[in-house]
Picture 1: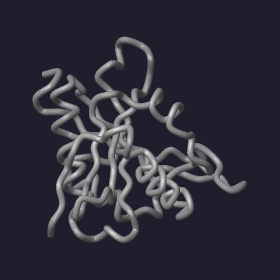
Picture 2 (picture 1 turned 90 degrees about the vertical axis):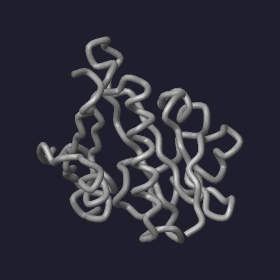
Picture 3 (picture 1 turned 180 degrees about the horizontal axis):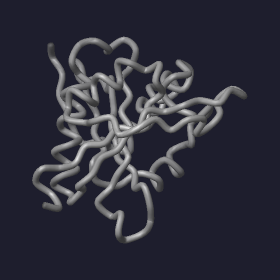
Length: 164
């Protein structure tokens, strides 16, 4: 397997967006129905902890963190976004990418990572659990997608080195 993990560059946004749009089209990755565009995405995600996975020098996956709140008490809590292109799934890329994202989060004083995942997205739940996330609950009817109420599984990972 020939892939590398690198810091995401703004010039890579068109490919990152395409991968994100694949996840939107799938219907089980996000409540979103459209890309926010670069400016809104950029504002909504930390400048640190934006990574891409490249296979044969081509971006095939990305991961980033966003703050869960603007309140100072939650400055060390972030939400995980991770998307792997359909053509690159089931190769271990997601696990390596999430592992590196966790390292980056800890280097940037993030003590808790959380992810809200649709129950139907079993592979994403398994990926997160394989990287130390634990299920903390189900958020029932938390939002609608396509006019249908959806639940999410709330997972979190507490850093063993930050905030202890």
